[in-house]
Length: 248
Ligand SMILES: Cc1cc2nc3c(=O)[nH]c(=O)nc-3n(C[C@H](O)[C@H](O)[C@H](O)COP(=O)(O)O)c2cc1C
Image 1 (spheres, rainbow, N blue to C red):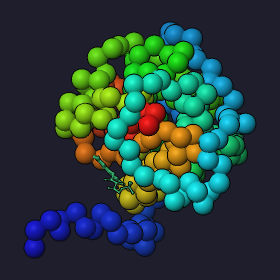
Image 2 (image 1 turned 60 degrees about the horizontal axis):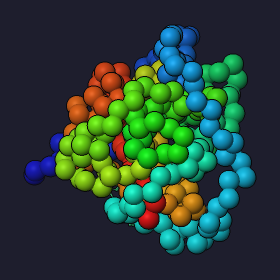
Image 3 (image 1 turned 120 degrees about the vertical axis):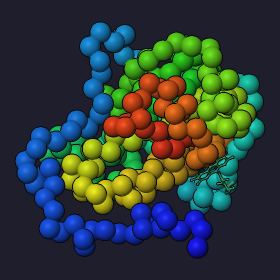
Image 4 (image 1 turned 180 degrees about the vertical axis):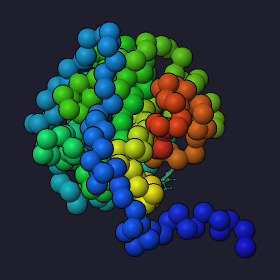
């Protein structure tokens, strides 16, 4: 039968791994909750407090009914307040657990490992230069990676010609650092890491709907081209999922 070779990957392998010993059990130090900020980085950018952001649609039932994928955006900019709320909803920190081996966020994650980093490709956000950024959930700040006005073309090409990605005000791109989950769950962490990504994007959909903005999950992209936009090594960190956001 065609197309069946990856099916095993979707099945749970927890029972088979009971005899293996994880790095956590071997007392290997835990990996950092957040990718470190490189020495010599530009000053970090403070984001507005997301608590109290006015919502156009505050009612959950309305949000569930109105959520949909949007592929047409206006040329308007997002405010920094809107961006801050979207980041809080999709990856915001609620608490650091214990001595820092895990965290609680606004989304669930298997074993509270939270193996994703959030990158932003900014075309139009008030107060931010066009360019690439990384979200720092521990301090709710942004790290500027590179100022560039080339993102519309790069994003459209990296998303297999899907022009709405290049035209969005900002694109959220989630990369996975697999060792954060492998440290605890070994070979059976990978299925759960993909499940984690779904929760992140669903919260982005709901938050965007609440703010009157549009977004669309994107899984059809060129792996090497997306990784290159954010200078990911493609082995210990790589793009898994993305979502352009704009005004509608
Ligand atoms: C995992 C995943 C990958 C997706 N990839 C794409 C994509 O690459 N391009 C696109 O236009 N839509 C993509 N979508 C959006 C779906 O097409 C959309 O959710 C579906 O048509 C249902 O429409 P709705 O979200 O408005 O209910 C993706 C959705 C998911 C959940």
